[in-house]
Length: 360
Image (tube, rainbow, N blue to C red):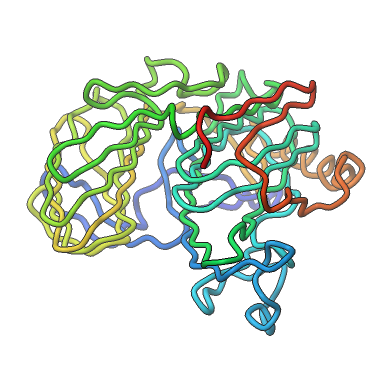
């Protein structure tokens, strides 16, 4: 929820639970319906879940023209024929855009993302890979969703989670790293599978590759889990230290029981920190995300792609982004993609290249 500074007209981000439509006693403190965009709590600033059933790709790794006719290309967030184009006009996705003052963690459970940035880095990452991008200073990249299969449909399931940076790290140089799907730990139980993206669960602990990340320090208790549950499966989420914010997001399934209450999918649950929370799935396969972390607790100002310390810093950063948007872009197109047969990789501006141990 944004509060507007009446002097400058710039929204100030304020953490609040007032938008929750329902409250109940017990260890579920509040619940709220969610959609593609999720409200979050400090240290998280925003999260989004993109799920689209894209058709067969054409020679440009794009949907056929007849399926994108009549759309508001460049700003297509309406799911028609099972998919959205987002800001893409040929290939779906997000052409060159800026980030400053925070971190993004991007996980394509299904589908691929072609990534290029203003520093000269590039890559393609796909189902289950985790891309960590820490951008204290101004940074620009594109994230396109190429339809790599021309012989079958191209379903996507992509979640992006934004983690704030403390004021002392807003001048950190941008850095990106991959954790390939083969190296992401899983914990499996009776009818459930937990992907550990940050923090630890059971006997598994994830690697946070960027040292400036708020998640890199175990004392901050940042935990990001994706929980897949079969019908009727149950799992217990253990208590966390006092003061840690924790939220559970149900993105698919139905009839989910959390702390004794029953809820539909597409629901956010604010959970008590000091309690073990029992989650029991209903009669359909379900996917959930758990975001936990100790808050940074600093007053910061956000507008658009920038989160910094005060109004003046935000205005200056936005001016610089507008001035240098195209001048800093080293690629031929703002919606650059790789050839169809490109395998997963990341290539850094200094020429180093990394690839996963196995083929997709």
